[in-house]
Length: 112
Image (cartoon, rainbow, N blue to C red; front, top):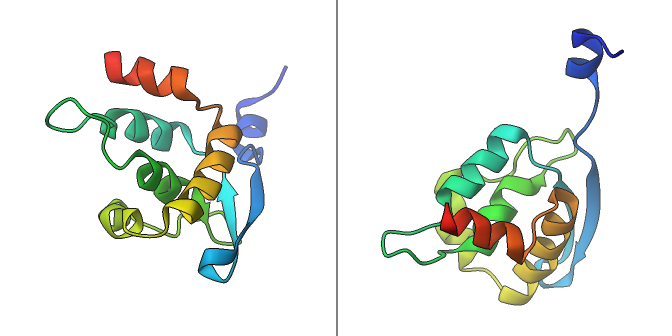
């Protein structure tokens, strides 16, 4: 059986490098923490019951530096949403795959 220390010390946030030609280079995408996942799901529904800026929200939680720290804060979501849809889609797709998020999970969060 795993000990508390083994669990807390495990590196369980895999990362993947993604080429983003629209931005002129590559980025690191990581698996979200449990806290980040809860924040993402809680932030999906806007005031009028519509999904708002989903791509930028997920990308802001999963783009990271070489140490795995987030590159963007929640305050950057609107600015990130103003970037190329093609670039956001590319990073969003990897973020979805790494985090097990698909249309079913987004719809489930919307209906909660």
